[in-house]
Amino acid sequence: MTDTIAAIATARAPAAIGIVRVSGPETLRVVDRVFAAQNGRPAAGQTPRRMVYGRMRTAEGAVIDDGLCVIFAPESSYTGEWAAELHCHGSAVVLDEVLRCAFAGGARQARGGEFTQRAFLSGRMDLIQAEAVADLIDAETAACAQNAALQLSGAMSRGVERVYDGLMDITSRFYAAVDYPDEDIEPLEERQIRDTLECCRGELRRLLDTFRRGRIMKQGIPTVLLGLPNAGKSSLLNALLGYDRAIVTEVAGTTRDTVEEKACLGGQVLRLCDTAGIRTTRDSVEKIGVDRAVAAAEQAQLALVVLDGSAPLTGEEERIFALSELAEHRILVVNKSDLPRRAEISGLSGRFGHICHVCARTGEGVDALGGIVKELYPETAGIGGALLTNSRQADAVERALGSVEQALSAMEAKLTPDAILTDAETALEALGELTGRRIREDLVATIFSRFCVGK
Image (cartoon, rainbow, N blue to C red):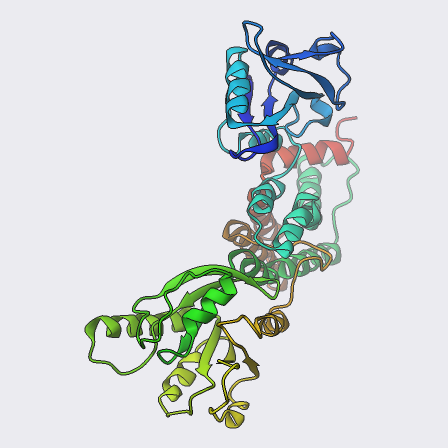
């Protein structure tokens, strides 16, 4: 990290304020080329973490904009190195000009994620926290944002750290006792090793159990809309989205293909898939749409079965009801509540745990539908610890858990200590991948810091 980077840190749209961020060893020199403080002092003479008023200017001295600058010393900066932020008016032209002047002053364009990468490399955050930054930016619900904030604050890292330290204590004591027999290092007893491994197993299991909930929260719940033609599936999709995404007509069979969109409902993101009305048809194009609807139902976790409440049941609904049973959860959505009820649904309560009456055309009843979704998928952030949300993290935890369980099995089989330690070290490597540690350096550092070897 010998070069200095710069980038526009705010959205590329007209706004009241825009920010250009600079980080690297030449930050102060770059700032002096771009910003002239009203107090007359150079960047090196400014108080860190205090906004200073002044002017943005070109290398030739032409004024670009009035604005503010704040300097961050390495010990208090996001990246762990000298950094600065230039706050000006949020005009794309102004921001581009300030950035161009920063490049002229010796900075280069930052790559995507490079500021956070530098924060990780400098030890300001671990890999879990670095990934949480991207999750926070991409959050689509308050629960997603809260979970990312928990990860960024170290809620998950602290749990992983406890497991890491427990396994490191086992391995480091073993190697210290073997490699330095003249030192008075008491080896761990079998009971201590077992207790540590069981504690680590419990922590890793608890963490891995959060993955399913975390993945649903981040990626959304695969949701399929099923029903007969003209039941109102596309109207319900539009009502959930808040705009007309799907074409709605009185002609049955208008939807020929699956339409996929995301919508927030009941505090969760639903990955909605509107499907063709399921019926027997000779139309080859419509038949393809029906086949795709069946395939979507087979992959869904939640099925919203839309029923036209203003028309009597015909028996054709049975295929749809059976298809919905492939999903983990099912909700019967009785549409067209603004019209006289002709559908007899009293016998369906045994097949559907939840029945909701809506008018997709007006949006009436959508809030009640959201309440049912919230009941089925309660918000999971804020339960005292962060949830796993990506496959990389889950894979590392799963491999660490497998190794810890193998170590416990080795103890049950009365294998030699080196077999147990091999599994413990494998678990450490997996956790090292999770947080970004490098195990061998940690192992050596732990031996010489925890035990006074060679004093």
